[in-house]
Length: 393
Ligand code: PLP
Picture (cartoon, helix red, strand yellow):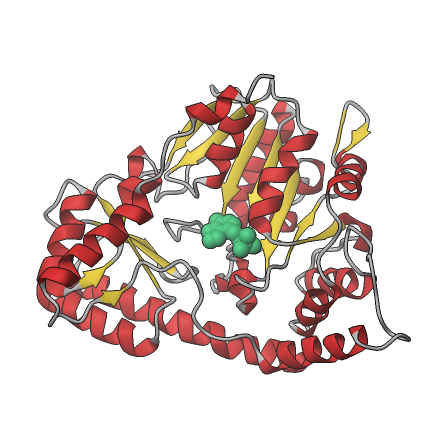
């Protein structure tokens, strides 16, 4: 019996544990200091009332013999796939319902999708990055090359024709940088992927934060994307499903390699290894797309957007270079006066009692940068930006 030795090649992530350790040590030494946590990547507002009542109704159905449901379709109930199809159609993207696969979240599918690709492929991943893309490929033993995201390219790397890649990860709006691609920029990636016969794995977990015209909410807004891309989406940030768990993945039928349909392979993979998202959760997710649900969710998103604006306004007034904040719940800024993200973390904690996330934890290009998130309460965000203003002026 041999273990998968690739697991031993995974780098230990000390980012969030080190943050927690430093914060508790500081709190113990300064119990009088109120600490403001601006590093959280989880939502804080509750599920919308429309979602709750749809789930309650579904719970009641499960308790009656006539309406009880057992195993559901692995790829999701038709009512939810149809709601998602209509959501895309309202934004001008035509999909068939059987191109949409309901999942228990984007993270699982981003990892699981690799089942349908050979381990012999070379993977292109932006740096800094959401760590799941790197770790899932290390586990499979794939060769990884990095696309540098930095201040020169606004943390939005563009294709380099000299780089050979078969699987390309893009995340827009990005975690951790908050930067978002325009449809024109995505067109360059689509052209590059098609010319190389590569696949783009497009993480759109934060699409609901896109506010500016010209920026993409779906890669399928770009002509030719259905021939080269898979899109991963989530109800986590859109509707507060981080704990409830629901997402969806779009695998277009036009996506074929050597005459083999990725949609068919993914369906085969899902029906073999996955037994679907609970009916109750899917009913809650479908309520997100009702008129009432959309209105309620818009109110929650408006709170996070206002928080992001408070943070980016603070950076503007201090003249600090940053990305994100406008089409994203993340603000990513250059540590003022510090080369090292951890040194800035320590100084900010000691000087202002504000906690954020050191950029170097997301990749080498994150060194000297820092991430703040818009998911804290409005009150906390307001106080944190006032403290930042005083500390950094
Ligand atoms: N993709 C990105 C870029 C994320 O930041 C996250 C969560 O923070 C996810 C995916 C995971 O989403 P889900 O909760 O749907 O698994």
